[in-house]
Amino acid sequence: MAADAWVLYSAGKLKIHNSTIDLDADTLKCALFTSAYTPSTAHTTYSSISANEVANGLGYTTGGVVVAGTVTEAGGTVKFDVADPQWTAAGGSIVARYAVLYDSTTGDLLCYSLLDNTPANVTVTDTNVLTLQINASGVYGAA
Figure: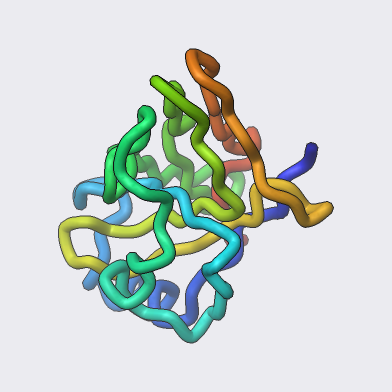
């Protein structure tokens, strides 16, 4: 299984650049979404897509998990990275198709990723852990 690269939401890009979203100071979260979600870079807020989020329970909490964001610069390239989000299935399976990073301080969407580019659902069975290992290059970088 290979996940796709993160895709930035258009409004998220604007809000990062006009400082409405502070990537290393605001509370960022990663939430999981079902195959009922149809991603679009035109989506703007978590509340507008939350109906297609993985249901609360079985080791998943509505709203997702907090991930610490960092912004660094090296050699003229700015990199945005987050800690690898994790969920442990408990009492059943967690089934997801997409991961979405959003700013829970403002409710604004940042980016999404297709978890299995087949595409297929990713199923984590009882007691197993789903870890989204963020690429060493971060969520995104800009020169």
